[in-house]
Image 1 (tube, rainbow, N blue to C red):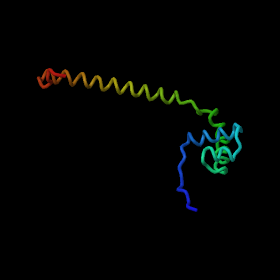
Image 2 (spheres, rainbow, N blue to C red):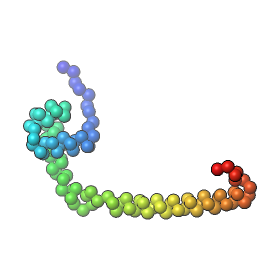
Image 3 (cartoon, rainbow, N blue to C red):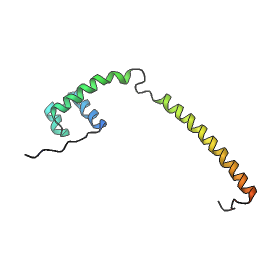
Image 4 (cartoon, rainbow, N blue to C red):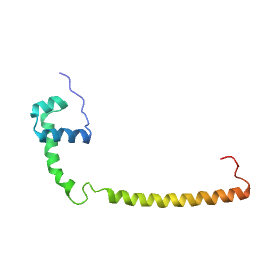
Length: 103
């Protein structure tokens, strides 16, 4: 009997398997066969999901809009700064005659 190479499962896959185990529509053996993983692994993922589920509803869990709003403000400021630099350089180069008419 040859050994199977160690596999790395994506977090989304682990969550899918753990949620299926929590639903209880299929037995552990059926889930293991369906997802091609060991029953012990499903049990571990299920317990990890149950332990970490409270963090989703805790402070900062699932609330990423404030972080992205800060990033958007920073990006808008950078866009404005670069636009000013481009306008300045375009004017300076056109006065010096170095800017070609073709753009």
